[in-house]
Length: 160
Length: 305
Image (cartoon, rainbow over all chains, first blue to last red; front, side):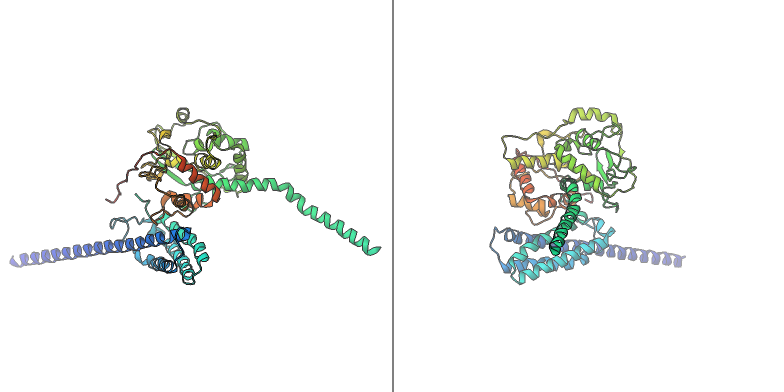
């Protein structure tokens, strides 16, 4: 009889330990998702700052500033390269507070293509900035901007 | 004298050949011009958006795009010249009556989800040009999908009452006291581009609240929050410069360096980014001339919270 109790206790212990492990893993995954969301939000905020730096320059409200242009274009280009990896599956609205829409993972190829478009167009912008080609830079800016909007249209929840 | 005769013959032949090439083109050109102007109006009117099922991979203007509203789900119909599924059997008069009076060729009323309440203000010339363009697109034999409208709104004859309450047919009247660009902007915003269909709040029966023109709503189409675009400094666009407004219309970029998404992203792609600079400046001039309405559009709760 004692053997039965030992057996049951052992099973219970294993079950409880297993439960903890699963819970642990779940918390770990949730934490990882939250971290991923926070990281990519920082990435997007940096993009927003870069656009705010460039806008007055492109409009001619501020003087041409090559250093600022190179810096902002670098930010945009680096962010573009990190976009696909910043949106692993399981980091959508079910995983935390994010405006990333489930349509990202339902249309992954399109999402990737749009990230690639930003990578290509921001690379051109960066080259023009480095070359000090003010007119070329200002002409390329709207193309880059439309690439941002192209992705937000279907993949980011409308701002609340 | 022979060479001279040769040159005369050659010259005459050239003239004939030239005439043969240009005459048909000259005969076609007014039509071609109408189609070109119609295409611009088609973009300005954003027709593509509701009449194309982009997400379902549907062909242009063949219909099927769902629009979720408090009254039910509506599906944009096929407006290609297909005789059975599109508007191939329509006459120009049918089209103008639909746009101006919201009446189908068979005499039934359209739901105001088709914004004839705005299109009614379009000029005859613009409607004819738009019709010319719609005749020029490739026909697509794609059947229409029936609207899923909640009772009692599903009773189409009730639309007579709705129209009596909310609809004033007739061309847009210009305000003589305003400069031409403001009037042009008013025509674009209120008639062609029908901005108020989303940006003006509605009453319980879906009638636009004309006292709060373009003042935004938290209950827009597809449940979206639609911002106040009157020049109120805190709750509208009063703090936005002309350059800020041009950037959002051309690029979708807001002054904080962010980009509009959802249906305004679609509007920027289909419509505002395709307008001429003069027209965009007119739109901005009109918006800035509006009476500011204080209306803070409530932030919706995120569904996952």
